[in-house]
Length: 231
Image (cartoon, one colour):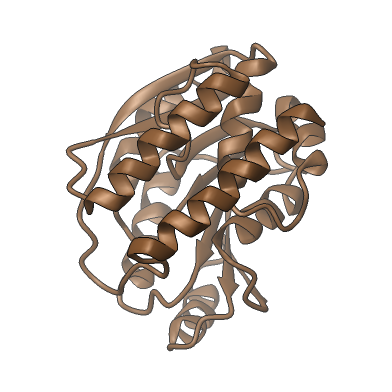
């Protein structure tokens, strides 16, 4: 049984993925954790999969799962459901906007908490993303509670024994399952710890959902989040 499994959804990140895997491998090995990194290639159209397969041969702690494209949220949720055999699950994105250097404080404080999540600071994102982040917090706050500040932050350490049953209740096609996970941590009165984590601007690749498409996607995720609360 692994102490920690790190779930990383990946889509068209050939420019960043090697650095991301190297950084996380070095950091987790430095902390002497019994861990595995699981990357989920969500139908990338560039050379991401080839890079991952090459890295898998180099790092014994890396596992590559190749899957058809289903979107960022469903890919994350699959990662959660696949890896409930570990004591902890940590989720981070593959764009290198949140660095492995921030992880020490999460792991150090884990024993007294069920849910440790980052609050992104120094975030210089487009206005549309900032707005949807604020609306996300409002939606989760109203229907689940305002205990989590950055409800969709892709930098979260979760105690599996607290969440495993909850993961399996979330529909597989949920667009933004991390909103629901943050909400469940609040409404279930889990022990929550939040840390500031420094946000870095994307250096390679590009976001998959832009401008008005993001608002449309956000609206869908808000409806699913609210609907789940009443189920």
